[in-house]
Each structure stands twice: as C-alpha cells, then as structure tokens.
Amino acid sequence: MEKLNELTIKQAQDDLKKKEFSSVELTEACLKRIKERNKDINAFITVCEESALEEAKKADEMLGQGIGGPLTGIPFCAKDSISTKNVRSTAAAKILDNYIPPFNATVIEKIRKQGGVLLGKNNCDTFGHGASNENSMYGSVRNPHDLDKVSGGSSGGTAASVADNMCVYGIAEDTGGSIRQPASFCGIAGLRPSYGRNSRYGIMPMASSLDTVGPMAKTVEDTAIIMEQIAGQDSLDATTVSGAVPEYTKILNKSIKGLRVGVPKEYYEAPGMDGEVLEITKLKIKKLEELGCEIVDVSLPHTKYAIAVYYIVVPCEVSSNLGRLDGVRYGVRVETDNLFDLYARSRAQGFHEEVKRRILIGTYALSAGYYDAYYKKAQQVRTLIRQDFDKVFKDVDVLIAPASPFPAFTIGEKVADPMQMYLADVFTTPAGLAGIPGLSVPGGKTKSGLPVGIQIMGPMMGEGVLLNIGSNIC
Ligand code: GLN
Image (cartoon, rainbow, N blue to C red; front, side, top):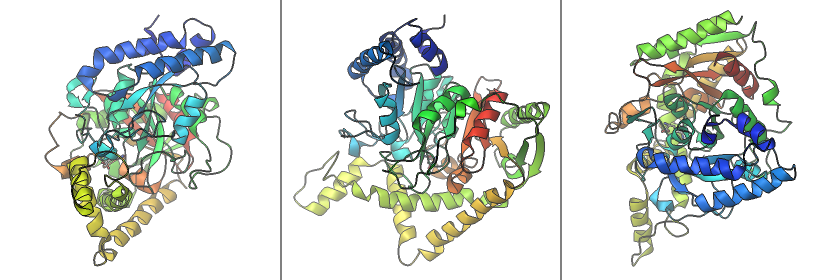
C-alpha cells in the first residue's frame, strides 16, 4: 500500500470508511511528512499539530457513527490568507503576524463542520501579491521537484504541500493565477472557479472584483469532490450565485466526443514562450482530438492588454482593501507618540515591498487627476477582454492553453525585476479579469523533470465541463 500521506481524497475516503486506518493515523502520516520536509520546502507558516490530532480524533468518532461528509477525517491545509478560526492567519504579512481569526471563512467552515482536519496554514506571496512565492515575509517556498526552483505563486505553499504529500489537499485563492500557476509549477490540479461560484467570505481581500477561492489537489477527481463541498450561495457574500451546485463528481470521465475546443492563438505566441511547454500542450490538444473533440483556432484579440489592465485594476483594489490595516486593530503595531506615525511606521514595517508598490500604484491611479486616464480606461479595456471570451464561447465549449509560458524558474531569477514577474501572469490574468473559471491539470514534464500545467478555461459556471475534460486527459 502507498504511504497514507500519499493517498488521494478518493482513496482515503474509501479506506477510512472500511476502517483500514483511522483519521488519526492519516493525520500523523501527514504531520510526519511535514516534519521531514517542511524545513527544506517552507510550505507552512503555521502547523497545528495538536489541534489537528484533536480534530482527527473527533473525525474518527464521526466516522464511527456514520456521520459527516465526503471530507470527514481527511487532513487538508489552507493558504494563509484564508481565515481559520482559532488558527493564526497572517497572509504571509508581518502586519498580521499575531492575528488569530475568531471565525472561519465560509469554505473552511463547510469543511471543518463535516470533520475535515486542518493541518496548518500555507506560506504564500504576501496577501497574494506574486507569482513565485518570493514575496512572502516568511521566506520563499521551494519547488518539491527541484529545490532550486520556485513553487509558483501566490499559492506556492499550498501547491508544494499537496505535491510533496504533506497533506491530502489544499484550499487556496486565485485572483490572477494564484491557484493555476503554482499548480502547474508543482504538477498538481488546481481550479480557479467562476467568480461567484464559491463564497469569498473570510478570504482576505486582494482585489475583490477578481478574487476566487478554490481547490488544489492531487487529481482532477479530488478537485471535483472538494468543489461539491465548498461551492454554493452564501448569505455572507452577496456576489455568490444562487441555484444548486452541480454534482461535479458525476460529470467526470464522460465522453467528450463532439466538444468544440478553442485554441486561442495569442496564448501560443507570447514572447518568452518555452518550447517544451508548447510541445507538451500540443500533445494534449492531439489527445483531445483523438477523443473526438473538434479543435478550432480562435482569437482573443484583447489578450495583449491583460497584464497592463490587471496591474492597474488590481493595485487600485489592493490600495483600498489594505487601508484597513493600520496597526491599531490587528497585528504589528509600532508604538509612537502620535497616531499618524503609528499608522505610517506600522505599515512601513508590516507590509512587504511589493505590497507597498501596489498601494502606491493604486493610490496614484485612483487619484482625482488620473482616475479617468488609468482606472476608468483599464476597466473599459477589461470589458473588452470579457467580451472576447463571451464571443468565443458562443463558438467553442472550452479553451485550451498553457497555464504559464514557462516551467518553474530559478529562485532569485526574476525577483529583482517586478515587470518580469508580472509577465509570468500572462496566461492567467485574462480569466481573472473576465471572472471565468480555469482548471490547471498536469500535462507532463520537461526533460529536466519540471512539471508543465495545461489550462482549460470555460464560460461562467462551466466548472463541470472543465473537470470532465481534465479527467479525460490526465
Ligand atoms: N501573480 C498574480 C499577482 O501577483 C496573481 C495573484 C493572485 O492570483 N492572488 O497579482
């Protein structure tokens, strides 16, 4: 038998029911792996050993009584920008270093209520600002496939802990690629759901009009299992959509014959595109063709503006959302003899450089003299980007493209040049701006052994078809 910590949700579920092992044993196996590996990988900011074992004990009782749900007794971890009751949640920012939320984010509440076991909180780029996890104030996360490479970002800690079997699955956040890109770099499945599919309540806001929360898992099937449990309308998030959540697990491995798959040319012509990534993506397109899909060349002409638009809209929302962190109510407080200095010095010490950069850009772009030239213009172009997708989804069912133009890069390679780092988001920001779902699935590996992720994008609320296609190609 595989080691317990290597199991998928599906395998663990079945064996827990059959009493092959207990949730406590499964949890201990993950904690052991964390102890062995986290010192090298740095995927966790907080490990909650004691409470995890207690939760596992309770889960075993639930399993004994035949109550709970599909995630009962299964150890998971969550990105540190997601609020977890009684467990420190820093968002990898010193300004929240000692913050212990008194409540769970809705998605976490749904899992913990049915006896999910929270192992710990994952390192990430601070407040989600980054594409390599090097913007954490708690050190960068290393890629388990090659410790000299980045894990991707911003949910790199979650991706690395899933890929390295330190947990069974993870919950993370995606604004402009933070689930899909690290999933791709670490060789796991990651779903950015449609905006409004899952509740954002309790997710520390980055850019509220783009933020989503979703699963990172070892298989597409596990991703579907998690989605069924966490999706749905929430009275605490007015942007969630009404209606029943589809039974995603029942849509898997169904025939995809006749589906029209769009190949957006802009995603294959990006500067700096890696040859092996291109090759691996083309192999998957061929596989789709063999499975009976119709492959259609399409164009999303405004894609070229996505990075520029994203890096105006997002900093604007960041500058507003982070205004609440002033050293008074939570986290690091620098005591001074006047209030203004307390704000200024607490923010100076508590925020990462990248956060400060975004606050400055956002504040500037929203200022009276520049609002029309930057923020308003960016929102107008954002509409054009969304309309590109609306139009193309009248013709095709899904789109296929790489999740990133290159595999995981070397730690330190891009960190000195924020523009280079921003360009890493070229294939993931458009879906974020449009609000549509995107699933990254493992596509294969480069000759040097680095994973390459394939991104499948679909229309609003199209998670089902993405998961079905994903289950067919990997
Ligand atoms: N790399 C993107 C950024 O830095 C992604 C962020 C995210 O999705 N949270 O903004």
